[in-house]
Image (cartoon, rainbow, N blue to C red; front, top):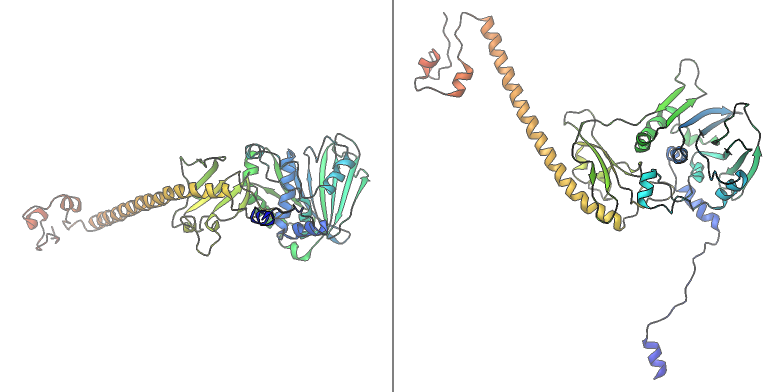
Length: 408
């Protein structure tokens, strides 16, 4: 009986701590999940902005026959309170963890910081073969962290000064051996357009200049590109600056109404902390049927919701959890308002179009009257206002409908 009583009770299990067979396999998984080399470069620029950089430069050049890309900034640097060698060792030992992750959503939005996973550096695998992070703070020695693609070991060593006028504090990330598959995507013109779009919120909020210098450009080819926030098309929709999400931070809303006859279709992106995580809000459901009214092409802009749990490494996509469920519930109300906005705008434009047609007709009759002064033409406005019983007498016409004319 005692044995039966024990078996009928709630089963007790032993806790099991999950532990990967090889931790580097997880690092490899995170690194390979970043498939877009442009996004990997954007992560490096994002780090510069997070460090308070006023100036960030992306440099594209050839070095010993190898295509090379670097991101330089004048920000505070990584772990500026630590000695450089110790700081770089810490970066290498804590991939997958970030000092940013303990910030609240409100703090992240205030600081415009999205990174939570400490994996921005290993995204370089999608760009090139080797990464060197060179850091100097307060005029001390510059230290370098070197990482190689798909290698579990890195190196930290002291770097010699490259220039006499080298700033006292700077960070430079250099990626050597750019992959052939990444070359076309990270070329300056395409990279400029991409960064202007995905970092739009960051660039608008910060007093920072981001430029791309192409040192390999020859002749009259453009050698410098300034990354500026991408302008939106359409008429700003007033009164929709924010969308409240009960229990979470409010979403910032910036929307524009695009005319039907506009050459390009509008698209609204979803952002978290100023960085785009979903290009088109019409695809937020993840189904084959795009979500209305975002799929109409009548809206352009961005909605920024700081409580999203963004996918690591790629920073594209997010966890469909409770914050997202609350966000989608409120989004329905916004969508109803926007559907009515489209209807009102279409009605207004139709009325305007009708008035324009009527104006053209009146102008046409004026031109005819001026060209044929020997004729008495019917009075369009008078007849439209009221039709007398004697149509022919009122118009002076000979036809039964009073629409005739006679010579003087």
